[in-house]
Image (cartoon, rainbow, N blue to C red; front, side, top):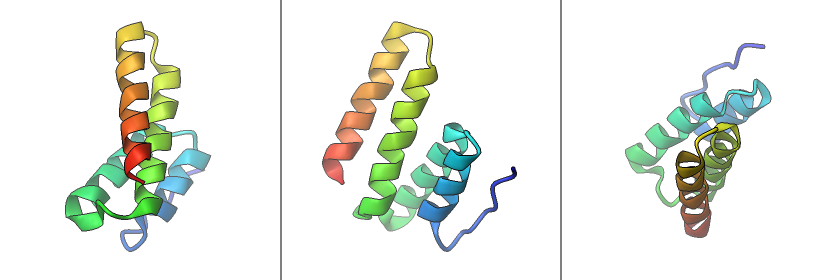
Amino acid sequence: GQAVANDADPAREADAHFTALAPEKALQVLTQALGSGGSKNVEVLWRLSRAQLLMGDRESAPEAQLKLYEQARETASQA
């Protein structure tokens, strides 16, 4: 299904992208939300960590995979 954009709730929009198996789109939405003042939003941060983890799972290059996993860990520690 097509994820429906909801500018008022980036966490909910990200959840729709996760359901659609599109962590790249979730990552984009969550990164934008953090850039617009959501840096202390735990709901955004843990979802961003999830997106980074899922993208790491899809990465075939070990170095890139490790980088995404490390980013996910760092993001989760901020939540």
